Amino acid sequence: MTAPWVLDEDDALELLAYLVTAARTQVDEAAEYGPMRLLTAAHRLAEAMGPRSSPETAAALGGPLAAMPTLAVPRDRTEYVEQLDAACRSLAAHLKARYGS
Amino acid sequence: MTDPVRDPVLAAIRRRRVTRAMTDEPVARADVETILEAARWAPTAGNRHLQRFVATTHPGTMRVVRMVSPGMIARPPAAIVICVDRELAAQYGFRPDVPGPWIDVGTATATILLAAQAVGLGAGPVSSFSRAAVAVALDLPDGWSPELIVGLGHPAPVQPAPMSAGRRVTWRDLTRWVPEG
Ligand SMILES: Cc1cc2nc3c(=O)[nH]c(=O)nc-3n(C[C@H](O)[C@H](O)[C@H](O)COP(=O)(O)O)c2cc1C
Image (tube, rainbow over all chains, first blue to last red; front, top):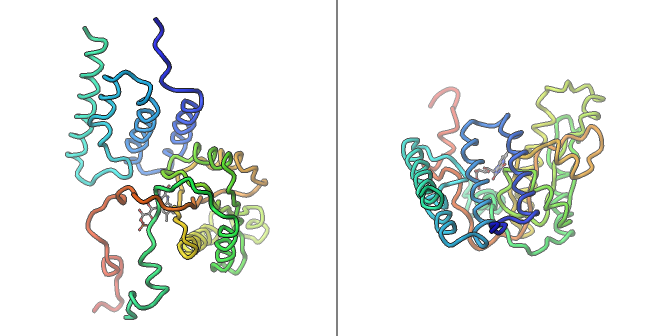
């Protein structure tokens, strides 16, 4: 069985354009914009995937990842790193449940 | 100090905030023209007017502009793109690296943001975009370099929290008197 598509061509093109142009703007911008832009891309991808993905994936996308700030990197670096790690752990738990056993 | 609550210009300056969530209600071209008329009166270095404005309310064009502008958080239904006419600047004898034309982009931006508020629109400046891609999307003439996009639209009722909402900066934090005291 082939998995159903979770992005249509327009969603995918929009995200691709975002990633390519962000690669260019990042050359000139503060380093802290890097994680912000990647998280914005992840949020946009999650938003587009949400309605068409499995309930388990939709739940994972709505977890700690959804709570990550995308407008600015918080001044407290330690807390930010912990939040990012929590998002990574939660995603990994979903990946493990889906593919790892 | 003049009371910013009572002076309408100072009050408008205090009230203005960037709009990062907009409704999809279209923006009237007449409102954009009012804003452009205000921008024309922004001060420019040597009164040279080396900036050029590219305005659009076209949904397809706005869609493409946003797709190539990672810093554009809102989905504005209209925009004014402030460009520097580099060829004209060179003809006037400005070297490519002199700051005057870029400072003009700043005075135009500030004027546009306030004028948008005056016509009841929200506005958000965006400098994080691919200049190369925006030049293609807008069919810019050779030599026009897009420097800043101001997205325009009707503010959504709920706005994202401001960037790094930390301690509020006061003018005293930014200012040094000479002589001290
Ligand atoms: C030159 C310039 C470039 C900016 N670029 C962006 C941008 O790419 N994306 C964005 O969301 N905001 C951008 N902003 C808006 C600022 O982040 C905003 O003015 C600042 O956070 C203060 O918020 P306030 O204007 O509501 O007081 C820009 C502002 C200026 C002056």
